[in-house]
Image 1 (cartoon, one colour):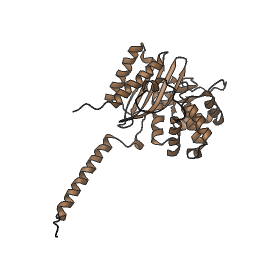
Image 2 (tube, rainbow, N blue to C red):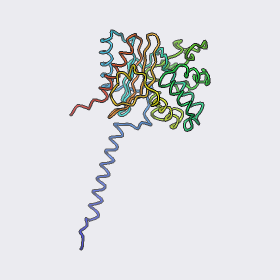
Image 3 (spheres, one colour):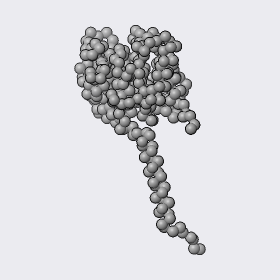
Image 4 (cartoon, rainbow, N blue to C red):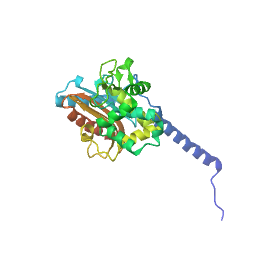
Length: 303
């Protein structure tokens, strides 16, 4: 039985039209959602006006709730799906307690690149105790092995500390009882961080730019360490029950309470940093995480 076939010319026209539409759609998606590998957070990166306004509102409401001033909080939020960023006091150096342990982890893989794909099981667990459980004994063990100067060299190599732009992450004292001190040259702090540099650290980890893609992946696995429970404080407390993956490094000392995290959940992926100096810091950070996650998981209003 003879079958009718479409003329070739109209078929080519239809296919060409479909291809053009797909290409146009792809161009639009590319413009709206830049490729993760090429996104950069620099000192001249503009904040997103809408996200900035919403983050400032969240911070203002929480400061009013807890009776805090603008000198007591610094916050950063980076949407890793739309590549929008919002920051409050992004380059103000803060005493950072345990947060700079992220630099020990980075330096370990910088000095042992082979560990990215061949990491000893015990070392993996001990680094997990340092990174996820913030264990001072493990932090001191590895910082002594690596050497304080070497850790600082790596921090500077990655421009995670910059004297021309407010400073950044600094490691200048082994954790625990230790007399060796090398404070940062700007603020004379032995452990320090800024919002911007912590956002950059987590961004580069996601991009696979810390040491190598393989090392970055292994570092993320160490932050996850499913065999080690999260400390149920700060961001983790505020995000409890929300079905999220949270990679984080927190810190607490005296009245300094901080948290920084790479957070992934249904329909959202973002980095949140909160640095506080107040006895109410843990409560502020828990509320901050909940409010920001509400913001990031909200569906856009219909047009």
